Length: 149
Image (tube, rainbow, N blue to C red; front, side):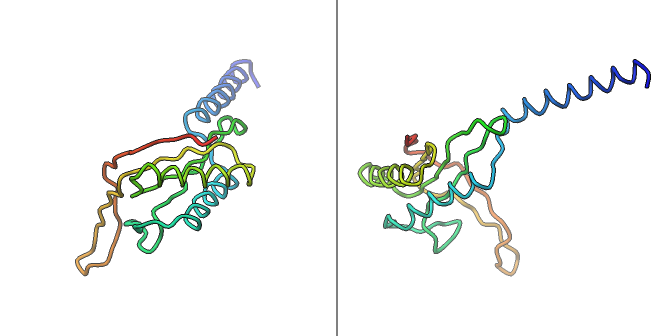
């Protein structure tokens, strides 16, 4: 190989390495264990709190959804997340936060970002026969955002 080819190859490898590092900061990687932990938090809340409403997106389910944390550079963890809808009273929100805090400590999980929304804004798109095809979320009002340590 000539020096020019080796120089171009080194530049390409350097570009790939730097690009990977920058990308991992901009787009944290989510691992299966992160997804399982966030899903476990959401399930724990759904099992231990009596919600007054059900989800619009998933009828019959409680309006609590996991939002997995990721990892920057494959090893710097970001918090897990949980989105909760239709719990507007502060006392009820505090009760849920305490459930999450206790579960986080018992399970040995890292911090959890909890976001409370007023309600789900979801629009279903349907076929001409009325069957649901897809949908999209609209602008949702955040009532409170808390990091549970």
